[in-house]
Length: 540
Image (cartoon, rainbow, N blue to C red; front, side, top):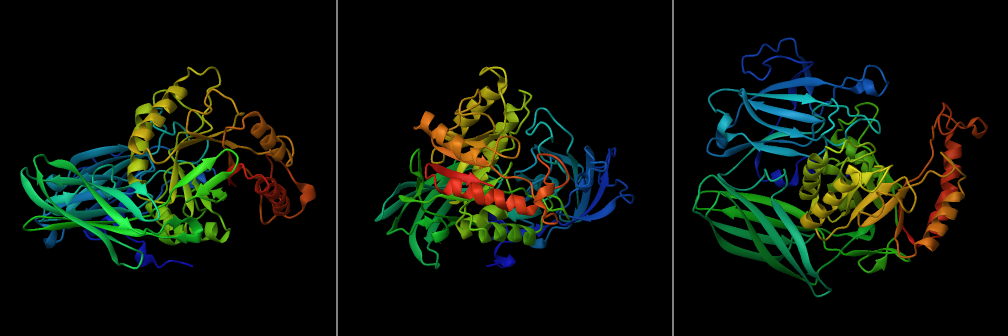
């Protein structure tokens, strides 16, 4: 079933706020001195629509621009925003963005896959149009993950939505890692009750502000099932208020069988204004057993799924809402119970659709392949954004830390230290979900088993050995390490729907990858995986 766009076109946390979409921009590749200034002559720039990427030549391997670019636009604020605070939110810019408003430098974001949000109240005016300029670069940076683009293209550009919006002066904080500012944690779950804690991040323009914080939880039919209200007095400009509520006779989010969603409505009010944020959430628990595999809400629930990139030949990563819907409809049609968002944080919309379709998500930061040893600080910032922005999604069940990062020489290499720090950070931010990584090494390696769960990328019969050796490896690994849960984070072979003659197969490199051979491979491998319940998850 295709969900209507009207339900998905807005980031959930902005639904009750005044929003101006910033879609029309002027764009130019290269270094342009003083392009942030209001009176800069941009008549030589080209008109583009955001979402936009500027390295589509990477698809055909022609040129592949890696470097600095500029985006410029003008926006007039509405009269109704005049007494409010003004913010700008970028859902994703590859790979770094420096933001200017009316010539004033606002901030710089380093990292190409998470949203970021800045307050710009001090820099805007209501008497005339406001100039917004963004310097964007996708050039390599050894202090940023990923440190290079050898695994997937770093297209560059403002390839997801850009939105300007306003809140009252007393607001639920939209700048805390561009998260909703509302976090739902299940404290205790039984058939009789679900005790949850809702943490609300509050931001105020003034001190000693007295406010009312009202929470209402509604079920999937919109009926109120729990509520609370309390008085809040702010003695600092930012604060966090924790509220505890009880949902009687809770209905569980149960994957594809019943992806049941509750909604929490949070209203922050003073005598003059009200700010409101809604968040969907689900109630579920899971465990992973080394022999029995994956259990959702106490029952066996094998995870079979796919790895998915945000990448279409026609537009690269600059996907429309319709592209995202089609992608997730394809995953749904396959009968997948799980999705791995390879190898980075995906669009807000992907996680919303996964919640609604009941598809469990392994999502991850782009710590992949090569490392410099100097990217640890940026990796931590990207992990914080991943967790805070996706904390409330019941579909998300693991935080991915790395993919095929190799410590070739010793367990003392920098990538090992970075991984240990990232795992510790993830546990601090979210104790409810395990960390995971994807290894292309054996059961024991210098980077192996630092994360809570370890999975393996195995391409038997393509890069090495035979198709049947997948089963041999799984059985031997389970025998040698019976206490260790096993999952296959990547498997598959190349295929081309325009090629059908299996006798012409070339592998693992070449020009001819017949679809019929790929189909045969999956028939063989599916039987291997489904007949081994100790394999808790597998991803094509």
